[in-house]
Image (cartoon, rainbow, N blue to C red; front, side, top):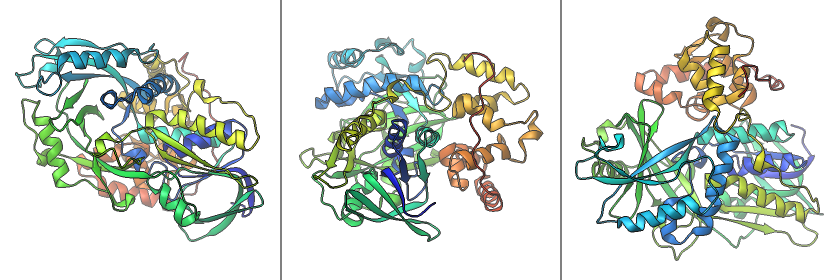
Length: 520
C-alpha cells in the first residue's frame, strides 16, 4: 500500500453498507479505498436471520414506507444474485388469541401489493391438516397463511459486493483499522494501521463512516466529531438444530410477547431458529448467545411443534449486534425501526463526512445509492446511479434460471460430485469456473482438507475473496464449519487450513473466466 495516496472516497467499515457504498462509488468512477478492522462481514452482516424481506411485522408499527422500499429492493436483489438469494415460502400458523385472522389477511394483502411483484407468488390461506407444513405442527393448528420472501447467504452477499467494487477499481484493505483522521484544506488526512502493526497515511476528498455498531465510537474517538443521530445496539441471537421438518417451507411463529421467531431450512441438514431482541451494552466484537436466549427460542418453537425441542439439541448458535437507528421513545428493542439515516457533515470548504445509522441487509443497495447521490452532489461530481440493474459477481443468470444454470454447470463438470457442483453453483454462480480453474478431475483440485473442500477453493478464496484464515473460510465464505462441527473434525480442519494459509502466498487475481456451460 502506497502511503500518502489520494482517493476520492475513504469508506470505513466492511459490512454490507460499507461494501455496498464502495461498490456504487467505484462503479460511478470514483477512486475508492475501503478499510475494515477485521474480516469482511466479520460481525453484524454475517449474523443475520439470512432473509431478504420486506418485514411483514413492521406493518404493525406503521412502517409502510420502509416496508415498500424493502419489498422493492427484494425484487431487485433477487435479480442481481439468484445464486445466493432465492425465493422462500413462509408458513404462519394461525393462533387466534394473538392476532385475528382478518388482521393477518389485511397485512398480507398490503405486503403483496405495496410494491410491484414479478418474481414471487402472493399470499394465501392454507389448511394445515392438508398442507405438508402442517405435519410437524401441533394438532391444535388447523389453518394458516403462506407468503413469499427471500433467503440470502448474508456473508457472501458482502463478499460479492466487495469483489465487484474491487473489479471496478476500488482498493479494499481488511485487517486494517482507521486510527485517526483530520480534515484540512478540503481533504481528509487519515492514519490507518494493519494488524501486523504497520501504519500509513492516506488522503481522501470525502469519507464514509459505515462502521455499524462502532459508528458513534468512530465518530467521537477517531474523527473527533459529534453526530446528530445515534444507534441503539440490539443483540439478535440464533440457534441451529438438526433438521426439524422435511419440506422446503419456512415458518414464522407469533409469540405472546408480540415478537416473532423464524424456523428456516438451513444447510440441507439443519434448521435455523431466531431471533431474539435484547438491548446490548458490551463490546460488539464479543457478543454471544446466553442460556436464557436459547431457552426462549426453544420455548417459542415448542408452542407450535409436536415434538419438543430442548437446548441440548442445539448444535450451533451465533449472535450479532444490530446498530438500529436510535429512538429513545421506541421502548422495547423489537419496536425500533429498521430504517436508516444518512448524516452528511459538509461544511463549506471542508471535506464531507457521511455517517450511516441503522439499516437492514435488504435495503443496503438503496442506502448506498442514496449515499452516493448525496456525496456526488456535495463533491460536484454529477455521476449517475447504476446498481439497480447490475448483477453481482456470478449472478449473470436469469432470475428464474438458476436450476437451468446449475444443470448446465453439472454437465460441464460431470466428474465433480453432484453435491459439490450444487454448492459451487450456489456459492459462486457463474464464477464457479474460476474455483475449478484448469482442473479436469478431483485430483486436479489439489489436497482434500475435508469432504468437498479442496485446495483449489482455498486458493480462490485467498487470492480473490480476501480470506486469510480458517475462520474466514469455514464460517463466512462458506458454512463448512457447521458440517465439520457436527462431524467432530472442526479443530483439526481449522488447524490444517490455518497452516496452509501460513505456508502460501497470495497471488494477483486473474480476470474472470467466461461461463461456457450453456446459456444461464
